[in-house]
Length: 271
Length: 313
Figure 1 (cartoon, rainbow over the protein chains, first blue to last red):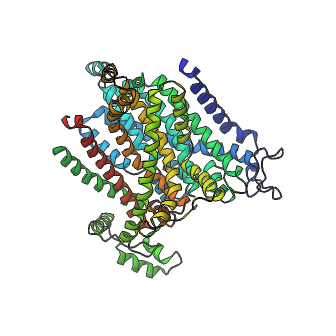
Figure 2: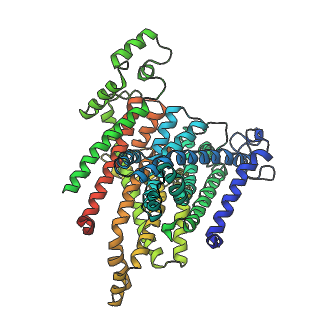
Figure 3: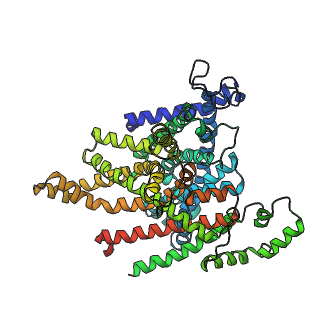
């Protein structure tokens, strides 16, 4: 726990806590309609007392939009990572634990999927299913699965060779009980670290997909979408792009720092 | 030799699997090629006729056979939006993308290796903190955001470089480089961050080893120890990681080329996806995955040449 008391650990912790809080509370405390409310006479306004972070090309308040966007971006990222863990965990665990032919076949499949750049895979799936929040989430989740499966498989392989697993096997533990009671708890730290780091990538992926118009659709507020909308007005109103850009940067920065420290604390290999 | 042969055989198997996955994913698309060609308002009978002649009523396995057969014999079909043979389009766009992929990788390595070594040499000092802060910032912003910032600074405000477009290097070399510079720099920034972290951690491990201590004890200068003894041993892992980043790069060029209107593979893939040009989606997705696999194989083989220790194992 002392590792969290370093500057890096503290900054990471504070940023992650703050952003999670914003994501959870903003839609509760603020009226969601405010995010799409247009002040037609106040378009592309610089930050002021009336609009703390300025307004966009439609006169929408950027502070409200960036706070509401936190919910969209975080929700997509969290659910996508949960999907990839739900798919990657059994895949990697069975592959690493079973070994032999099963491992060969499963990892051949995973390696093939890894040949597709994650963003390309996510874009293709999103385009195929039709871009909306739900399909974007699925697309990112599926695209991240092979990476997670690969790491979990390596970890399961390591744990499966431990003496206590052998002892449990000698005592007649069934495969299912072995996976659930001995393998899973021991690979969990690595899974948690990877999930945290994947969250950072998922935020970036959502931003990329929305930027290309194959992610979250307007008028919803998501950070990627806001950056995309700012493209044509950047010269006149740079804050329209800088505000959502900073939101993405702070979130990903926080998650990366938090993940780094979490790895030092939890990952047995880094000790 | 057996190793190389094995790797080649496994590459062929993987390419086959890639083609299967590509075909499967694109076949979930609602609406089909016939609908794409004739539009949704077309006469149902004509549509049925076209479906028949395109072989869209055949079982999926037969359709896959046709497709892969065409790919193998060089008949890649026509793009629906560009009305051009796909093979010709891909050749052209691949060259354009090769330019920014190579340039961004060069920028990234040129910055990341010295920065990573510097951080490792001054481990836990301010130099190390600076390097890790820089790379953290690099990975924390989406690369298209850097792209936008660069367009603003170098194209709009300073007016030094064009903000969009592509020039053929064979026709106008200087123009081509000028157009490729900003997207390559923006791509290189994110890449640099990953590679700096990797160089640092590899170098830290190496500098702690016995032979480095021996080299220092012999009275060799610190420069020789770090660069000749240390870095020589770090090159292998760094190149491997750089090779693995090719996959990441081919994902990022989709966004970056679209942002800069740089008409390469990424731009082409985006146009195909946006317009649901199924034959073009299949071809671009397949080619990108195949290129990533092949580059990774080349990097692994290169590793054999660079690091003789691997050959024994």
